[in-house]
Image (tube, rainbow, N blue to C red; front, side, top):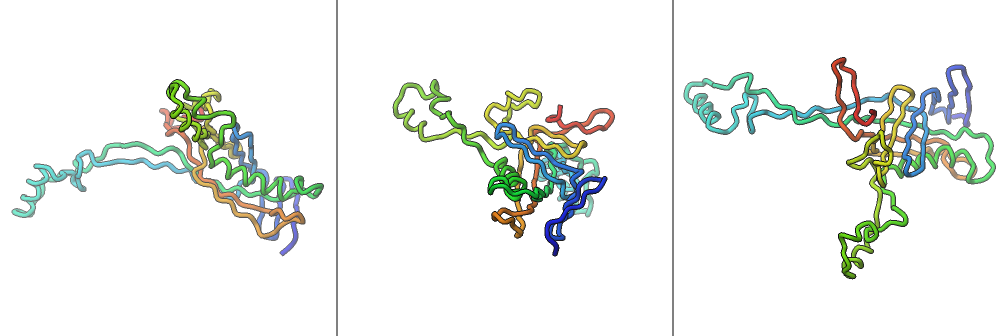
Length: 260
């Protein structure tokens, strides 16, 4: 097991840490949450698998493979099967209707390594600035953000009226920004996000999604630390989901609504 080493090549910078990681820095992933004033850039640490699920259901409620269900026709079919061993089920009765398609989702693995060779202070060390801080920022993207200077009482004065009891109750509740896009968010108009915190994901040059949220964030810090006690490497596993369902045009090219 070697110490932190570096190899600089024409194809990009490759950092080998403790003989366990080989990071090709030519492919990066950027995760941005503008309202939280944080932008995280990490090295893509694995393959990207885009996932969408199309949901269907039988067009006759309660129908089995033949689709006759438990109604009158289904009852007659059961009698026919019992008496004659015959069925009136038709292949086309097994057809289904489309319920919907889930929004585009995918998993990302990001890797972080402390590659700074100069340690000035505990705040500037590579382990903190290049590993710990970005990982904690990713975790914060999955949590609500308290809105400073705002309260339920202040935002809903008209609804509360002049009752002191209503105001006392309202003062107990603080306002938080949701960790993702609001229902009325429009990627073309950033002000439409209001106080919500949509997340933007950029992978290399081939994938860019706006109006996302992090469904799951898992951080694994290495057991190797710098002289100040900060981890030298980390991995972040993200599960990302887009706000809207994608659609295709006549050329069968995929369009995600949040990208327009």
